[in-house]
Length: 110
Image 1 (tube, helix red, strand yellow):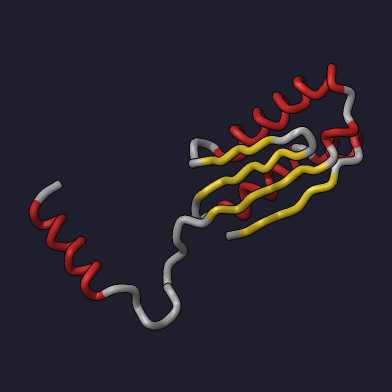
Image 2 (cartoon, helix red, strand yellow; image 1 turned 120 degrees about the vertical axis):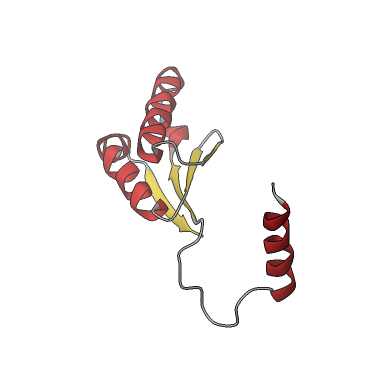
């Protein structure tokens, strides 16, 4: 980092955030939570979790992701200015699995 870069950072910290709304999108995080995994046969659950994870990696296309799993839910988060669009792609890619197994989904834009 150059001294000019450090000076820009110091100046930005001193001035703070703008008063009005931001004009450019920032690094958003959108999440898709899939509920109902506890109703799936445990022998098939590992393979289904693998398919969900692979679909999430494909939808994210190299963007930062979060992944949290419990016995009954999986929450996948994708960061970026187009995160909501990527979550919609993920939901579309998983639509057949969601319908077949009777899972429910929730969105959490942040």
